[in-house]
Every structure is written in structure tokens, then in C-alpha cells.
Length: 532
Image (cartoon, rainbow, N blue to C red):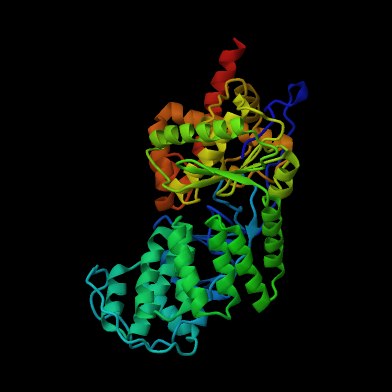
């Protein structure tokens, strides 16, 4: 999202609250390029291998740590846990883009997982990785839900030191009944999804589906994992198959609607959501449906133009043919620039919607200071414009940067880095803003980077000024010290490291506290130089 306002308020002063803590909200699923499975973040488990697990609730029992996600409980050995942090700060993983939000029912593991005999254990050595082909075998019908101890024992054998043990999984696939092997693959995929490593999850779910091809829940998870990593066409095929196999499942049609929406098929999404609501009332889904219907109604008379990488929808009475042409040309030029800069190509047509001013704020519910949003669709207000302006070009480049960042990081980029890069690519310089931010650092009144991981869309104008300025200055500092290529490498490490701070530390050896100290020293020197 781009900020319309200058960083320095009238009179040359920045107004802040003094105590920087955003309102704590439950983490919810966002449309487009965001997360897949809803996790209400209440406690954080930090493992000794450097990864972490966000949980609703954490309990200690003997030598085990039991954590709860939704209605499902999991167990890991206490020996693999470094520490548990209660009520951690909320982290969101994308820029401060205004977007439609939805809470989607998580597929329930206990709706399918079969009873597993404790005798169905891997017989070979743990840790032996096998990649042999697998034969599709006759499928036993799903039986009753497992006892908690059964599932817990299976997870304890599959998850070692916070990671899927491929050797143990291979042994389950080789020596267990097909239904048990499928359960093991499913649990491995679910673990990866719930621990921020969605790139590994589709393969596990696909293997489970081969063993249990008639189980729609597996297809739901498979579709969710594919959608998480941006493979919407494959996700749509899986979601359709799941809804066909479970025509009375409200959850299957709710998920199908999400995939349709992410694929820029809003009318199909509405139809799927209406069918889901016919099967089961859901107040939150009804709100999503109403918002999507409002979006479709507003675009009913829109026209459409397409270029190599973009499809632009617009109100023909509001947007001149010359402006349409210039917008597509500007976007294509920026796309080529970003392909070179990021060494990455999304290889996906991107929707761009041009609105009148009022329609833009009605549809996006963006804060008043926003001049564009990106929820997988670039949404831009252009009322009154007849031709390209420098400001509109900057907005287009800014919002397109968010798309590249989201694809590269699979939606995992902290907002400060996302917004800092988007401003950098406009291009914008913070040269005159440094004095203001330096003064904040001197008084220790800056917004902590941990706080700047969150979305900016809930900020007021003055808070937003500071947040955007700090984000740009931080990214400029990192670029000046390490180079642009190192910044891009950090982006590409985020999916593997599972957090922006972990990727930052891997590339620079700085955590957030250390980076803020370095940045404060740098700004203090800049301020002293300016005062000479």
C-alpha cells in the first residue's frame, strides 16, 4: 500500500503515541497472496533447531509439550523445545495492504484420520531417506477417529527435533497398511503447513491422496497447500474434485470459493460461497459473500484490456483510452525492470482494477491515506486523471513491487521490508525524512521493527508517516551496507527461514535489536553531519 501524505506533518513535527504497540488481533486468513490455514496466535514455542510454532494454547505434561491449534492437539518432546513465550506480539506476513479478509474453517484431522494400531511402526532405521516409487494399493475405508494417544504416538515418530523425519515416513509408506501410510503422509503435510513451510506440504498430501484417493479432506488440504505457494490452477482442480466428492460439505465449497477468488473468478467464488451457506449458516462467510457481491456489482459495467502480464478492468466512462494504454505500458515497463532487479518472474497474469475515488474506498475499505492497495489485484483510484502522472506511475510501481515480493516470499515478508522495498522501487528517497526519524531514534521513540512486522492499514495518518519513513530508511541502510543483491537474497530466504528476522540474521548476522542499534548510530551520525 502506498502512503499519499508526506512524512513531516504541518509545522514540521511528527505526532506519535509514544508507546508503540498495535492492537492485538487474532491472526486471520487473507485472500490473495496470504496464509492458508487459520491460526489464532496465543503462544509461541521456540525449538532448539531455530524454528518456532504458533499455538492457541501450550501445556507441559511430563516429558512432553502439548500444543493446541483449533480443536486439534499435538505433542512434541520437551527436550526439543528451547522456550515457550506466552502471548507473543502478533506477526503478519505481508505489507499493509487493505484487503478482504476471511476466516476459513480448518480441515479437521480427526474427521478422517483412521485408527492406527501401535504395531504400525517403521521397522527400518530412523533417518534413512528413501525415494522409491510407490504402488497404489487397495484403500481401506476410513474408520472412527483415533484416540489422542494413537495420533500422538504417530506424530512423535514422524516429527524429530521439529522436522519431518523422512526416514521414518518412508518406513511407514513401505511397511504399513495403505490407510496408515496415508495418515503418516497427511500428518507430515499438515505439520509443514502449520509450521510455515508450505512449499514442502503439497508433495506429502499428493502421496496421501494416491493411497486414499476417495478422501475429500486430503484434497482440501492439498488445494490449500497449492494455493499457499501460488499454484492456483492446480489448487482449483483439487478444490473442484473435493467438492464433487463431498457435495454436502460446506467447508469444501467454502474452500472452493477461496480458490476461485484467488484465481480472479469472483462470480464463481460467489456461487460456491452461496452453496456453502445453503449447506450451513456462517455469519463470517456471509460478510465475505456480501463484500464480494459488492465488488462484482461495482465492476458490472467495467471494460477490460489485457497485455502480456496484466489484465486491466476499468470504468469506460472514468478512464480514457489514452490513460488505459499508458497504464498498461507503465506496468509492463515496471514488470521488466523488476524481473531484472529481483531475478524473478511471477509467470502469472496480474489483475489491475481502476476505480473512481469513492468506489475505491468503498470496495477496499482502505485507510483514507492510501493511494492504492494490492490483495493479489492491484486496485488503484484514478478519478479525474486523463493521462499518466508521475504520482500515478509511482503508485503503480509501488503496488507491483508488493506482488513480486509476495510471490518471492510466498506471502511471508514482514511489512517493514515489504513497504520499504516498495518505496525504494517507486523510486523514492528518504533523504529529507532522515532528520525526523533520527530525532525519534535519539529519543528512543522509533517504532520497533518487531512492531513494524504488522500491517500498516490500521494506523492513523501520523503513525503511518513514521512507519513508512522508518521502513524506507531501514531498507536504504541495508542496501547501502550490503547491496541490493543481498536484499534480494534475503527475500528469497524468507520461505526457508520462516521469518523475516531469521532471513535477516542469516544474511547480515543482525537480529532486529542489533539492526535498530546500528541504524540509530548511522542516523545519529547523519544528523550530526547535517547540523555542522
